Every structure is written in structure tokens, then in C-alpha cells.
Image 1: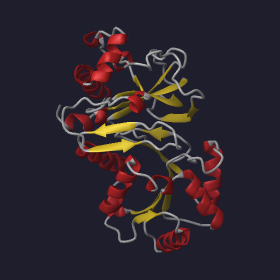
Image 2 (image 1 turned 135 degrees about the horizontal axis):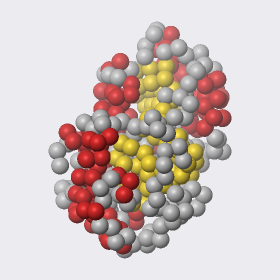
Image 3 (image 1 turned 45 degrees about the vertical axis):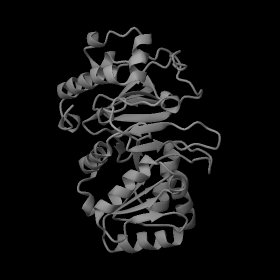
Image 4 (image 1 turned 90 degrees about the horizontal axis):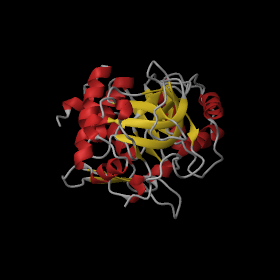
Length: 326
């Protein structure tokens, strides 16, 4: 499978052709996905559109090694979780694909990384090992080549001073942070930023009460003195990210697509404009599984954007009784 096929899909037909090619490759080479498809009695070569592809429930990443490559594992990315929770594990056999995906993805939405100073406020991720987000942000910090780019843990005073100084000098800044840490920052300081993008990665990580997106963005927007709050949509089990530049509407890079499924029938894909469970096609996940049924609820639109509306209340995805696959 040539790597160029993963990242040069700009038309629907190109994307679908590559997705179907990868589907058949993974159906033959990913043992867990292969078994899953056999339980569904899926005729792999009878699948002719992306809407007919069965999506693997994301819970399998907690209980199985999801790989479609015989190459050695280079990195194991781990999901965050409270003590005692079973973590998802993403066994990555080609880190170069992940790097190409997030670098090209950032450039696709925001332009050359060297134009930005990257300030990262990600304490919940820095305090543990195996974070794919930390891996990505660390690489972006290095690629920015700006001396002030870096991570901040609990040193909010230093971060606030650096942020204000750089913004007043007209530097282009991206402040990327986990939600609870950004709230901590604006509770201690008030900003009037003119040259800074604020990007939240979601999640209170048990540190604060969960807020709906509108409330969170209103507090952050007022605290930082900016009109819009940006967001990143990614997860341990993926190698690509979607981004929102405001209003909670996310876009995908050309090698990633969001579909929604019926919450009562996991195998039924819903038409655009309908709310349902979020299914992700991530072509960069070629050596794992590119077709994942997440636990997020969302809504897709005809222009390719999507919203994240929340998560399933129960731990299992309804409509699928194959979660105990051995």
C-alpha cells in the first residue's frame, strides 16, 4: 500500500477507492477485524461503498492488539483513564505515517508550523506515559523552531507572562491546552489577546465538573479576550485529527471522514444531517484499523463538517453484541 495514497485523496471517488482498498487489506491482515467481519458474515468483496463497511467498536482497543502489519511495533499509545480503568492501546508499527498525518493535517488547516510559537498546557497528558497527543505536540513544538515554544505544567505565572509578551509583540501563537488547565489559567489571569489561537483538546480528566461546549467556550473566550475557541478532535485509537476553528464545527483532512450510525443498530449508517454515533474512517490507520465506531455522539453535515454532541451513557455501544470476541 503506497503511502501517497493515504494523504492525496481530495475527491470523494478517490477517497472511497482508497478506503475500499484499505478495507480489503485490513480484512485479510488484521486478525481481530477479520474475525469480527466473519461474525457479521460480511462478504468482503461484496462491499462496494464506504457506507457498507462494518466499523470495529472502539472497545476492542482495550482488549485486543489491533494490528494489520507484521512489522515490529515502534510505539504503544495509551488512552488516559482513572486508576483501575482499562486503557486503550494503539500498537503503532510505522510512526512516520503518524508524523506525516499530523504534520500535513496541521498545515492543511493552519499553514506552515514555522509561523507559530506553540505553547502547550497539557498537564493531564504530561503526567503519564504513552500519550499520542504529547507525541504530536512535542513534534510541532520542535518543528516550529521558535525559542519560546514549549510545554507548561504547573508554571502558570511563566505561561501567562510569555503569552502576553509574545502576543503584544505581534507573534503568531497557538496555545493548545486541556480544558481544565485553560480554565485554571483564565481564573487566575485575564487576557486581551490579539494574535493568539486558543485550542482546547477537551476533557476535564476528573479535575472539574464537565461543561457543555458552549459554556466552556464562552468562559474561555471571555477569559482570553478572543472571539472564537478552536478545538482538536483526536483520540488514542486514531492517527489523524479533525479541527474546529470555532462554533463547534469540525472539519477533517482529506484522508479522514466522519459518518454517523444508528444508535440502536450499529450497522446502519445514517444520512447526513442526522445525529447518531460517530464512525471514523482514518486512512492513516492503515496498519491498525481504519474503520472505528467510537463512543461519541455527533451530527454530520453535507459540507463535510461535523459536531460532537456528547458520549454514550453506557460503556458498550448499543446495537452490537460482538464485544466479547475472543
